[in-house]
Length: 275
Image (cartoon, rainbow, N blue to C red; front, side, top):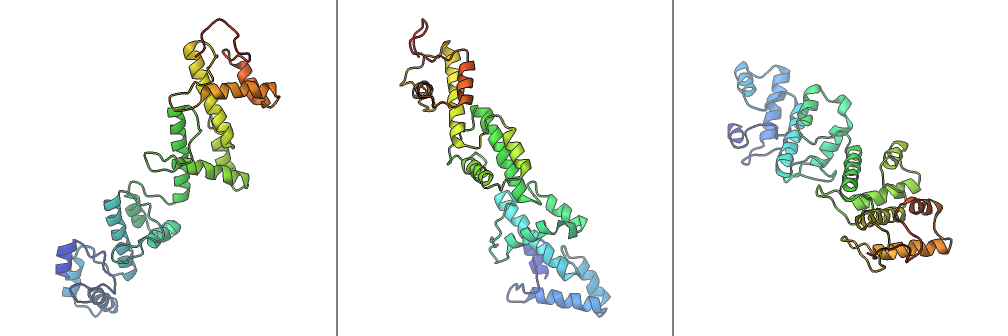
């Protein structure tokens, strides 16, 4: 026991099936607990055991501390507690299941255990909700940086969030009426959000037109003009004019273009050089 303690610094990881140096130390510990509960363990042995770091008389408590010790090791190695349900530690301990179990029974955990879990900076009792909120915040950040929400499906943020796929998933759930009202309201409150990816692309192009036209003081964009990020803005402008002539331009888009002070429907109107 002392050799194990010297090597690992605590007894938290031991269970009744734990072997150390070819000796079933976990079983031995359980024998001491049983003797203590029956009142047959000498006072001298009780005192010796109580002095050991991580020792507990309760098998259930010992098992919990064993799980917590595995969680702490994972956190120290990976920097987070977002552990897949199927994850097992190197010694076979089912850490993913242990974490999920503790998240689901928060109301039954004592205050000390709750505080232990909350000591991890990213600990969450509801990973699904927290993951959604993290993705939502990443979308806001993307809009602030780019001025649009035409996010490529393969786009992954610096934090590792698959933002493009996440947005596609929200639109898919909305179409199937599987998105909560609260999440619908949050998404719709964000400027640039659209339930249809084509709308997001159109808004992105319109924003580019707004920037470019204001930069040059007019809206006469050459058909081969491309923005720095590869958007074929000249082609987009020409398409809007064509759709209007064919009565294929949606009323809301027609109104936005009509309201823009630098938009022109007829090529060659005005005295300026085209971009």
